[in-house]
Length: 158
Image 1 (cartoon, one colour):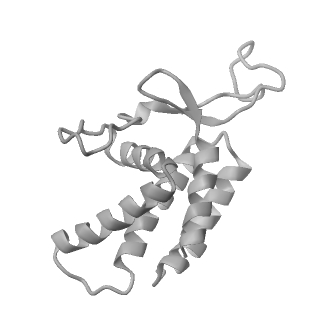
Image 2 (cartoon, helix red, strand yellow; image 1 turned 90 degrees about the vertical axis):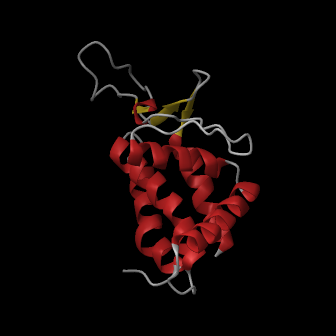
């Protein structure tokens, strides 16, 4: 298992994102990319730190996440997707200081079907097949650009 945040990035994050970029219609790969990008915060927060109580670990993790959100607001989108994939449904925060989750449930993450994957008569020629997310306001947002942006941000932090 990787022993540093850089090792985790090299072993898990970069190959997972590359696989998704090669198959941008693959829902499983898109969700996995979001999950490993989200977990980069855990690896960076705990790097070089001794094991300790959960409260202390959460403080370090919150600090890394907050710093990441300041430099890359798209990280919240990735967090929402990763958490929705893990928990199926996300809680609605009561604290006004907590961000409103743009992706409250895992069923908001889906994929368009290209010509060769759709049912007969439903796919369109030259139609883009991609993983996208339906946000609370009903708009849709593709996942791959956010994944690439967050990956580049993690690379610059390391």
